[in-house]
Amino acid sequence: QSALTQPASVSGSPGQSITISCTGTNKDIGSHNYVSWYQQHPGKAPKVLIYGVTNRPSGVSDRFSGSKSGNTASLTISDLQPEDEADYFCNSYVSSSALNHVFGSGTTVTVV
Amino acid sequence: QVQLQESGPGLVKPSETLSLICTVSGGSMTGYYWSWIRETPGRGLEWIGHIYHSGSTNYNSAFESRVTISIDMSKNQISLILRSVTASDTAVYYCARHFYEYGDFRYWGQGTLVTVSS
Image (cartoon, rainbow over the protein chains, first blue to last red):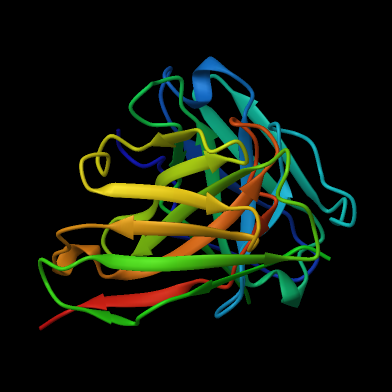
């Protein structure tokens, strides 16, 4: 099972919107809606931003939104802020007895 | 607030056994799944396996022959044992909590770096 594919880096200016893609297969992203997204600042624990493809946990800014089409999930950050500069990765449940979860390769977001 | 803290030796010799503990505070262990996840520069994040509070486990087949995850409810701890380590097991190891087997990892520890080297 390969990792989910994400772009290595995405950049944007304050106030802009950016989208990070996460591409899998019909065995993971394409087969259900158990996709989540995480933000990780250097030296910090990951923080969940989106679960179940589109849902935000309590306390997460509505500037973060998720979607899915086929085998690709996406995270959109609207009104980009300097504090959004961080690493982002996706996760999908896998319908297999050999593996339950697979992660994305990670994307570094830079606010320029 | 739920907090998870990984602990254990930062250096393990090749062919030996890696042992880590995840201590949970600020919340119950009952009703949750507890996963071990690792991150390496080359392979990124890898799910190692999880344990439910009942003790039932599920492992990534890539590790299944040499991994054991256990839970001690009396100590609020989850342990990871990885046998016969090699340099490729050098990684930051995280523990994380999720409510459903398929669910998101809602709480994570800070991670602990384990280096495999003689």
